[in-house]
Length: 243
Ligand SMILES: C[S@@+](CC[C@H](N)C(=O)[O-])C[C@H]1O[C@@H](n2cnc3c(N)ncnc32)[C@H](O)[C@@H]1O
Image (cartoon, rainbow, N blue to C red):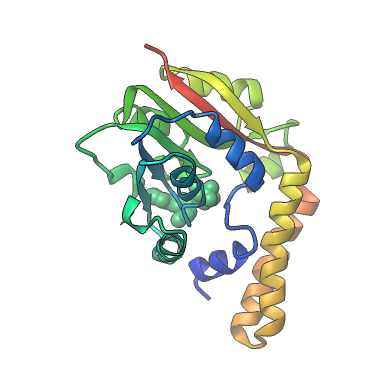
C-alpha cells in the first residue's frame, strides 16, 4: 500500500497535519494581521488547511500552495472549491525547494514541512528569498521537551530544545513576534485521530490493504505511546524579518 494513501487516510479526521487545533490555527493566523490583498505562500501545504483558512480570514488575499503529494493537493483543490476559494489559490505539485516566484509574499508558511529543505535553518534561508522585507513567516517545527534517549533520538530525529529552536529560527535574520506551543491535548487529538482513522479504515477494508493500514497504525502508535508522547514538542513560530 502506498505511503501517500496511508497518509491520506490517517489525516482524514484531522486534516491539519500538525498537532494544532483549529482554534489555535485561527489564533496564529489572526495574529498575522495581513493587509487587504495580501500574498500568501504555503510550502509543504498538504491539504492547505492553513492557507484556505487564511484566505477566509483576510479578504482579497491570494495564495500559492506547494507540495509533492498529488493526493493532498487534490484534496486541497476540492476543499477550496467547496469553500468558494478556488479562484484565490494556485496549487503547485513540485518540491518546495524548487519553487520560485516573481514577487515576494506577505506571509510564507512552512508548518511541519522543513524536511522539504533538509531542516529549519535551510528552510528559513530559502524563505528569506520569498518573503517581503516587512513580511512574516509561520514555521512549525518539533523540539525535545525532555532530552531523548539515544534510541529515541535515532528513531524520531535530532531536534534542539525549545530555547535552542527559537535561537536557531532567529539566527538567519528573524524575530519571534508570537508563537504557539502545542499542548499534550493537541498532540493526543492529532495522534489518536491519525492512528484511529487508519485502524477504522483497516477494519472496514479487510485484505492486504487493510492489513498494511493496520500495521502502519500500530507501528506508529507504539512509537508514540512507548516513545515520544510527552517528550516531543511542537511549536509554531510567527517570525518577522529583522531589518
Ligand atoms: C506534516 S505535513 C504538513 C502539511 C501542512 N503544512 C499542514 O500543517 O497541514 C508535511 C507535508 O510536506 C510535504 N512534503 C514533503 N516533502 C516535500 C517537498 N520536498 N516539497 C514540498 N512538500 C513536501 C508532504 O507531502 C506533506 O504534505
